[in-house]
Length: 242
Image (cartoon, rainbow, N blue to C red; front, side, top):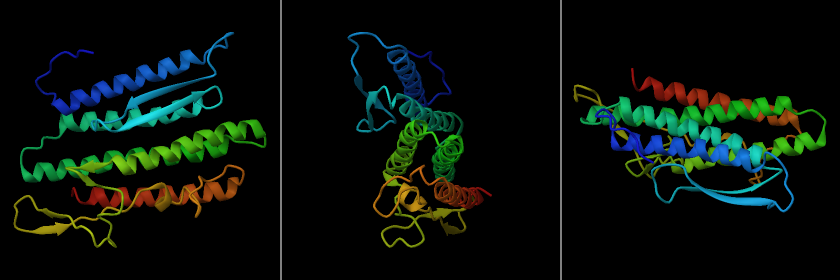
């Protein structure tokens, strides 16, 4: 796939753009595969999709009639993250130490925005579910995919090889610390990033099972708590830019 040369595009942004296009193409392909039932048509398909610039980061999808909508819902957020990273790479230079620091903060915010959007979508899904068991089962598959996407983002979000959301830079961490310089380089300050896995956000229970829609009140309470935590973390990270 060729893109027109643009002198303002970085290599990374071009790669992110290709990933976005590939995700869009994959979503169309999935919709076409399950658009109508045909005699002799396979009951399922397996697809692999590169989701970021790390060559080993592949989303392996086992598509069936009862889960392709859930996977398509997940792909919307995979695309959202890639689009955010593409825009960031186009707009934020990384020449000086201070510019690299700003890029790092903005990149962290891109990932946080995706996790927040997923959590808000989980809340909407829970409000759409009634007492119909078949609808509840279908929506639970979507919940499972979206919670798994939260974990995928948490595990792949990094800057210069440093994992951002796995607790390495949380206030309670004893394994690493992150110090930034002010623009005039006269002072330095420490930056903390909270753990943002599904477990840390309360989107899975103590057995690591995804929250169940069968208990809507409990589901919504825990998702709202997760949304609040993400919003607070976003506010804290944004304050670093001031």
